[in-house]
Length: 400
Image 1 (cartoon, helix red, strand yellow):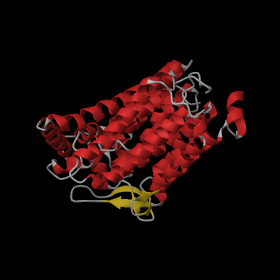
Image 2 (cartoon, rainbow, N blue to C red):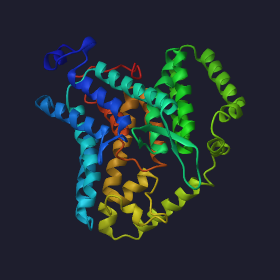
Image 3 (cartoon, one colour):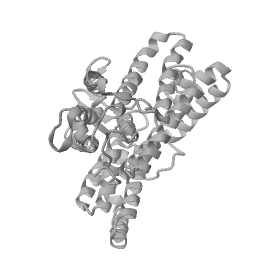
Image 4 (spheres, rainbow, N blue to C red):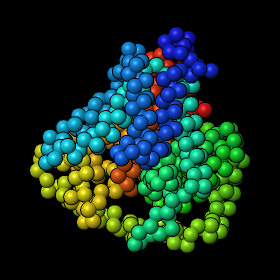
């Protein structure tokens, strides 16, 4: 830690300037939907500001010699190369900018010397942003409605609203972190944050978002119970809470608008938007298989799935979207990056992050969001100290 203190200005308890700025960026990723002016969001502005700070410190950067770095550069190559295959390359520049910012921030942060305190601060900022989103869901909601679903709510900030499914992604880390900590450390008051988060998720009416957050919660509880010395007592608490929720489902749903509550009367995807997603997946996969070899390898370009789906929308599955847009090269690079992140978090026994990644991977299987800044922040957290040089590790506290 002394070496880090000499290289970077410290805040209290070993926090570095880079870590502090990265933590602030992690907080503002939840505001990526808020448009400052057309085409420029709060999330993008904070990404650029962080990038400027990181570039100022780049003389200290040491790019890790690791497989995940190769996966990131391979994905960056596919994001750039696919422009050459687009009929109108200029139309792909906004999408390229989003990926370029995520990748640049990712590479620089994992290459710079950060302390374990920096990592903890970033995790706390993700939880804090989720809490603020919960509050805004109640105090400043915006309505979402169309011909098949009305009454759904999202956060509204100066007229900017996030997609309800993507909004659910902002709660996943907080749900995983608090679920894990509640049972690993006996901090059961954190379950109030979990409950508040689930209420916000229910207000969105997103079934995919609910399943993703439930997965993160279950994984967090599982890892928390496996690491505690009070397994039997805490298991009884889990069983009691599960029974309480099961018996009170009708009362919980009664707190929602009837049209939203009806979406959760059955989580089957055989009706409503679920069946439409399956149809879109079939369209995109069929179009991919009928493509020529060049397009299968390098993709069709940004937003290209909208040209082959029956409803003119995106694939609503990040993995299928990446496969068609960036080809097999981009798909393999992106998938390997996600896998390496999960393995890295598990090896470092950061089980809260493992649970969050599991939940987010499930979420992006139901929507198109490979450029999500929240996802890329969590990927960054998984690798912050994976090279083991100049960075203090957390020794299995799951982000504590």
